Length: 88
Image (cartoon, rainbow, N blue to C red; front, top):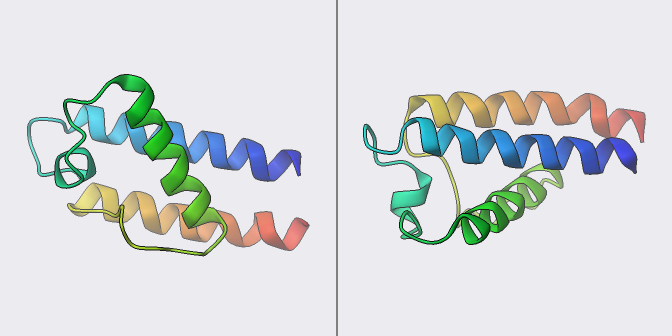
């Protein structure tokens, strides 16, 4: 359980940082979801939501990658989740 919580928190923070690093260069997930001007807390909650949905393989599809580096991040998360689930 600790591994799941840690992985989810790590991926959520990384997803949020990716959006911040590319805030004005690309149409990132913050812009496509219309929360680029929302408060940090709302953006962090959205990041955790994406992380839990992705890590649990539910994949609703409402928050997703929009440019190359976000796609690469998603692929990394998908590949990193495989060993996490195999350890459970």
